[in-house]
Length: 96
Image 1 (cartoon, rainbow, N blue to C red):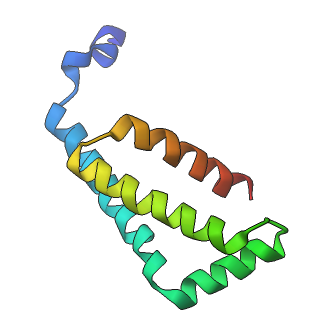
Image 2 (cartoon, rainbow, N blue to C red):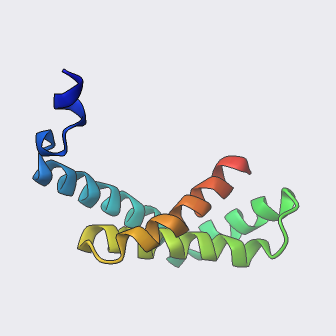
Image 3 (cartoon, helix red, strand yellow):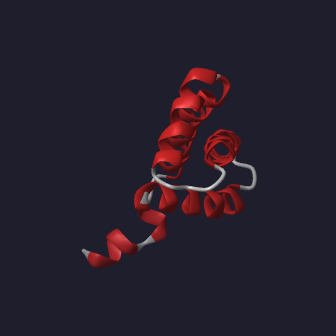
């Protein structure tokens, strides 16, 4: 049983691609908040209240990484590099 679960041939490759595309769509949706000034101003103010330096720049940087990372996942281009950036972005979000 463990061999079937851990065997890479047992995974449906199109299913994994579908998961990457869905995750990419969700990241793009959240990344497009970058173009809404009211949302970004509120987000920057919230980060400023938490004591984060350059709060508005950090807010835009995080949304930019989400947008570009989502596009990267959907297209299947530079996914490993963007995964590193997204990891640190989500780590920051989780800690704050």
